[in-house]
Every structure is written in structure tokens, then in C-alpha cells.
Length: 587
Image (cartoon, rainbow, N blue to C red; front, side, top):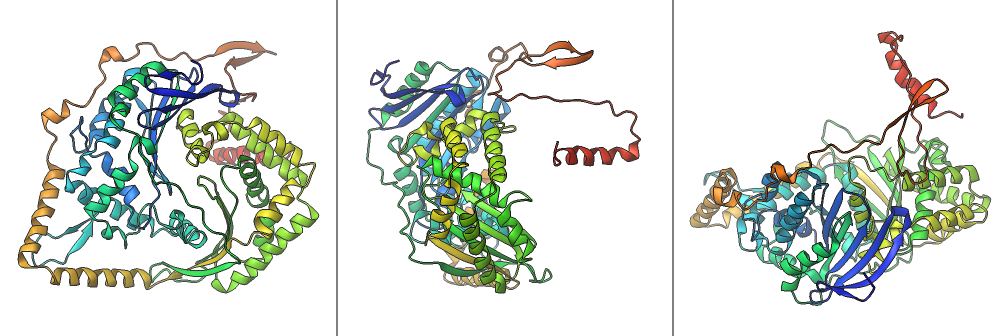
């Protein structure tokens, strides 16, 4: 496959080896529709597909989040209420989900079975391009919000999946804090809006705005298609072109992410959050100092700041953390370095504090950062943080999540903003530059540039308010009572009827005809042999050793097992303690 050749409507723009992920990277563009496609070819049989769209919200209605839920409520080929509930019953998927971020929506799937992988791809593609949500108003009612009333004498209520979900999420102080930090740093851009949806704003979303959002952003010209693993790419390109992309013409999609204009000076804010009256408010305040830090298109700075966060704030010996803990400003110190967005941000957080400690916190943090920049950061601390970063990158252990899925999320840090998709898959050169930074003032210069001399910062206190929840409930009850009073008897009957109809739809079983559209694996599609486990039994100095010869990216793993049958049952908890301690002391 040569660069600039056209295969099934796709032009190959670039072909490159990415040694760090043992893959050949192919960057394509679909000529007719403008869809972008990135393929990582390797011998991993856990194949991944995702289609993503740049979806910058312009308000707090949560439209991006509601559309993400709603596209999965039936489509042209699969006219069920919830195709994925049925699909999962006959699938061997290793991942199946959808995610809304502050500026993008992703639809990833993964499977080790070829037929299953193809089925999952088709259900997802039909869902995003031809969803039933565009013609069935009950989808927005169910997934977003609706007025609910069952008898004329009852009060009017709001309900809906995302409405209820976000009501729960934004009553959690940790979720709310990140939302408020972003609002304080990005008041004029998409990042200042709550992409998940603010329950107070969700009912402002109309059916027209809902459909318009899908029509505007869910077009191949605004899409990012990702394929990973051991597959016949020509077959996949032919399928994507023939079944979907060739039916669309390239159009301009105004989805560009605007940059927040830099503040001239520190911005201060105090915002309330709800706590119950019996909880009390003493030492329940969150204090945060926040900066925007460069752009995600600069991977060297991003890695440098990630190492800096760990060295300064993430270990018991971290000097900035220690200074803040010793000052007894609160019960704990936390941090966020969020770089899954065009303009990343860095936050230092004090939990369980008081609002009158805000100035002391700010001056102490800035003074300590100044000292670290002037006197230098302990090289052993930095080296440990670089080693941890290197180990994580090489190990690429993402728990139950397929590797290809995490790589697919990682590439969006550059690809979504016009950079090369493989930028964040490469790390060898960056690690080398970090190690060289130990012999220069590289890390100190990051503190100077992004924290000390950076005017784009906010100082935020999020304070507990025992009356806030009740006040909001009261305001909402009054608003709904006013709305109900403005309705005629016929309009109230109409809402009762639509509430009943929605519940009937939700409770009614899928039709046999609709169920038959869902692709189900047959026994003949499933591999009969188990996957081989590379284990070789060897003897070493009279000890039995199980040896696995697999590619581990330069990391040697050794597990030692000891027979503890002689340890008394009541002493077993001490073994857990011992195993924890051994990892925390010098060897």
C-alpha cells in the first residue's frame, strides 16, 4: 500500500512505523465524504473500532451527552428501542460503550471474533448516521428530559435518563468541582459549558435543537474513524465506503474549538455546593488554584507537566504537597492535570478546608513554586517520576480495557485539533528529552513559564451551603407550578397521555420482526480452540520456574510465590500489611 494511492474511495495520506506500539500506522482520508481514518496494523487479535465526532457544546443543556445516549436507541437497519441490550446477548465483545467529553463524542467497540467485530461496527455506524431519534420524539423524552404527570391533580415533574444522571453527578462535590474549575478558566469557550448537562439547563433543550445538533456534527466530514489490530484493512475500507461513506458528500462542518483568550491577571471566585443540613459546613470547603497550561499539540510540555505533577504533588515526599500538608490548610492535597483537551489545565486542590484560608493557600503555593524554581527540584524525585512514567508507557497495562481502545482515546489528544494521530503513541524521544532535562533547568523552567509567569489562572473556593439544595428544589417547584398553571386542561391531558405512552413504549417487548434484525453469532462463528498460554516449565537452582516468552516492551517481570500454609489464620492480615510495606521501603 503506497502513499497517495486510492483504495475503495480512501486516499492513503501517510504510512509510518510506530515502534512504541509495535504497529504500522496508516492515515487515510475518504475522498467523497471527507471522513478521516487512522489504522494501526499489528498482530493483536483484540480488534478495536471507533467513530468519533468533534461536538463542542455552546450551552449547558447537555445536548452532546443526550445525543450520545439517543443515537443508540434504534436506527434504520436496527429498529429496536435498545439494539445494544439485544446485541450484547449474542456478542463476544471485549468493549462496548460510548463516551461524551467536553469537546468530542466517541463510540468505541472491541472484539477478538471477526464476525462479531463486523456486527458491532455495523450497528454503531448505522446508529450514528441513521438514528431513529431524528423522527421519534419519545427518544429525547426518554434519554434527555420530559414533563411527567400521571393525574391532573398531581404536580408537574421533570424526568429523563440524562436529567436524572446529571442530577446525581453534579450533587457529588468532586464532579462539581472539576466543572466549576473549567468554568472559571474558560468562561468564553466551549470548555466553560457543562458537556454532560446541567439539570437546571437540560429542560431548555428543544426537539429542534436536539435534531439540529445531530445534523450539524454527525456527518462523515466531522468524523474520526479508528481501526486497530489484525484485520484485512482493504475489506474494511470497501465496507465503510460501500455501506456508509459513499452516500455522503464532503461539507464544511463548523466544529473548530476556539481558544480562550488569556486573562490579564488572577481571577477569584467563590461558588456554593449543596450539603445536607445535618452534615454541617465546618471544614467542608474546597480550595483550588488553577492554570491553563499550553496546548495539547505540544506533547513534550504535556509529558513534562505530567512528570512535574507527580514529583511535586503525588507522593508522600512531594515538596509542594508536603508544604501544603504541613501548613494544615485542610485534610488532604489533591491535583488535576487534564490534557485531553486543546487547552489543558493544571489544578492544586485542598480538601476539607475553610474559605478564609484561600489567601494563605495561594501565597504559600506560589512561594513554594518560586523556591522550587530558584533552588531546583530534587533530582531523585524527578528521576523516580520519569521512571514511573516510562514504566507505565512501556507496560501499557490498562486492566480489563483493550490496549487498542486506550491508544484510540490517546490519539484524539492531537488528531482532534489537526495534529498527527500518532503523536501521543510515540514516547521514546520524549522520554530521552525528559532524562536530559534532569541535567538542565528544564523542569524549573516549566514552573516559571506555566505557573509563576502565567497570568491565566483562577483561585476558587467551593463552599458548602446547607440551604442550596432546598432553595433549588423550591425554585424548580415554583417554576413547574407556574408552568402547570399556564396550561389548559387539554394540554395537561396531553402531557398525561404522553407520559403514559412513553411508559408503555418502555415496558413493551421488542417485536419479533425487530429482534430478527440484530446480528447474532452462530456456533460456527466461534473459535473452537482455547487461546494458547505461552508457559514453559523450567528448573532453576532446584526451583520450578514457569517461563513466558512474550513481548514485554523491555520490562522483565518476576513473580515469587511462597507457601504460607504454616501461618496461623489470625495472623493472615499481617501478611497483607507486609506485602504493602515491602513495596514502600528501600531495598
